[in-house]
Length: 252
Image 1: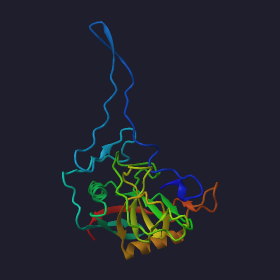
Image 2: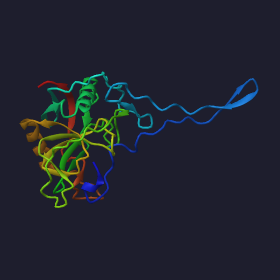
Image 3: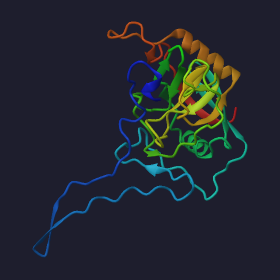
């Protein structure tokens, strides 16, 4: 999420945006003639409409292949996924129509157990931003799946009542959305909105959280954020009640 939504910089989802993979120049002797090795080609995206693109300079935090990318990405209906956590089950309803490529990627990662045994590394408690962020197996806030894909941004979010400028939109309690490090850098990290939050509409919304999941989020939020010697009363950091996704499963 962008630092514009909070009073101090926050580590991005990815340490840097994907770039061109380069190999070190080397001399290759062929018939007595010195030659310079050519740079590696840009990694090719998948050929479907989602164009999942490898990020070799941001390798996967846990090995996982690229998602399937059919000519027609399923864009109808909903899919249930349950995050079975040590703080209780968090049921999600994924909306294919709202964000088909995001739903396809999320289901792919869940199927390959990318989210199993991972910690939700970040809890925020700003007056206008209250979310739990998950999806990085490294637990650092910089890990991803080794690929990125384009935004599927919401166009129908109402203005945030706390923002007189009208720039920010309401990400309502119970919203499920993707974290990112800038335009078109979606990967594996996502956030669960515990209380109505005001954000620029730069984050793909792809589902909702059920009542049991919201009850779990409320317990986690009530536990607060882990204090550090540098910040004894933090409003952004690791949850004081550790949250582990033990298993992400399709269905209830």
